[in-house]
Length: 132
Image (cartoon, rainbow, N blue to C red; front, top):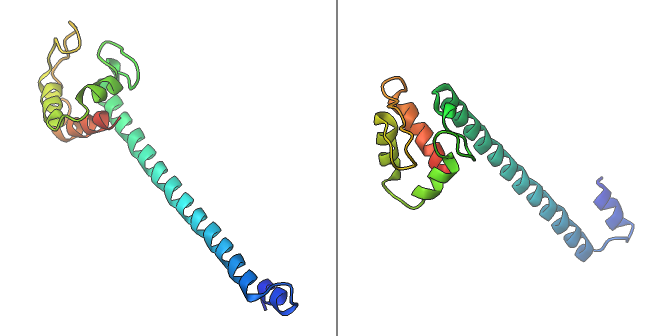
């Protein structure tokens, strides 16, 4: 016999109280479930962002760039802000990273990164930058 059954049998809890108690427990359970799902999703996104940053590091990008401050090249958050809402940004930036270039962010040229960085890695890094 459950604790709720004991309370109901002792007269300390009527059917209305039992229903309210059940709804509180259910509501708390649902809140706990939603919180767990939200935390798990955040951890997955954070893990993916960390993996993408590690790929940028391995590819040599972080020698000249940083996520949130200008080094030799622009901060990645500044790049993301500049291209926000631009449907063609990913293709433009992939081409720029592959071929290199200068003049967009100042006089310091960015060297070509292809073929030493694989095309799929460049695309992954650019998608990550645009997501910041």
